[in-house]
Length: 447
Ligand code: GLA
Image 1 (tube, rainbow, N blue to C red):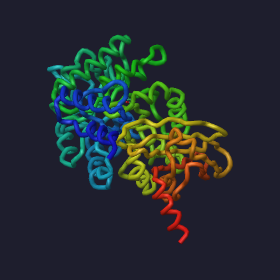
Image 2 (cartoon, rainbow, N blue to C red):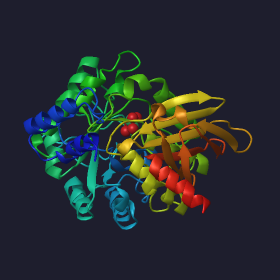
Image 3 (cartoon, rainbow, N blue to C red):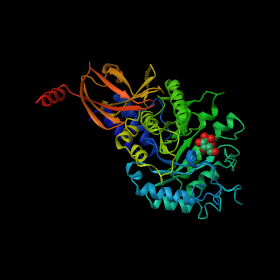
Image 4 (tube, rainbow, N blue to C red):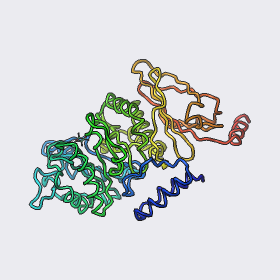
């Protein structure tokens, strides 16, 4: 075990310890030994949560604000929908691979607060109330997420939390909620926006319940103001930077383009406890081809993005399910080094992305952006990967997507030829090997 690993393990193990101890020991140790630890320059929100990107399901992209349970009982925003999805998440392998949070988005509320000023669920669509739903979700070994808004109204026009931060945080804690997505609509000034996001973070903390805090703060600051990510990271476990994802290739491309164009600013701030959130996985819906779904899965792993699916798990295809449950790809997303990947280069309609992983391993994604023709080949010089170190002196390369297969041992000075479908991605994992391992493999291959 390297010092770097030990340091990162310490970071991962410190959840229940007191705030002072946690900061004191870990930071002192990590900075003293000066090893790459995955810790960004500033320490993040100190609630011990989201040490790896959050995984779960969020209703918005697929089910939006459908409140018509009379005509569409199976797809309206109701406790029945969340109970059915929770049931499947627990029984169909989703929980086993890490999808843990089942999250309610906008449109769960009644149009008015109760007589004590508390938010309440729509009584027709959530007859048992949120406490009851949380109990059900917890009984399945899962966690419940909920949605509210920093301003006067939610984006869909339900009651906002402005002026009610403490009451709402306490209500969510009393109900047993485990994650809050806090939207930024209908906020009347930039000061109220920033203060509101901070105050809600502190209010959640004061409840004493562990509640992941998912923000949209930087998104609502743009384009007029420049987000202060050091500050945002101190208050939020993840944060949306870019407008809502849609079920289309155009939307995936825009999200990736925005991320790579802003990577100098946003990549260094991501790390255990605080992540950039490029929005939901739309795999398993209607708008993406098989190759485009592979691209979303691979790139969300490279970007260390929260993996919040928005799809209908009751009717998902076996192919989409296998992709979303791919343990090797999830392992890259959840890598404990906690460093977000970045775009290394872009040429001739190819994009090369890479992400450093624990134990000096690297993930590499090659995307073919050309939307005409058939599969195209791209040859990678291995010296160009991982700041020259990914394959130094040798490495074992495994292709994870589109298919899992061992490609074998490679020397530092060699190159690798790949074939990529239009709008598809090849995702690779590179593990450094010693010269001894390499010679052994070459000899045993030739026997
Ligand atoms: C905003 C958010 C979305 C979703 C909707 C709900 O657009 O960015 O993710 O929560 O509001 O109204």
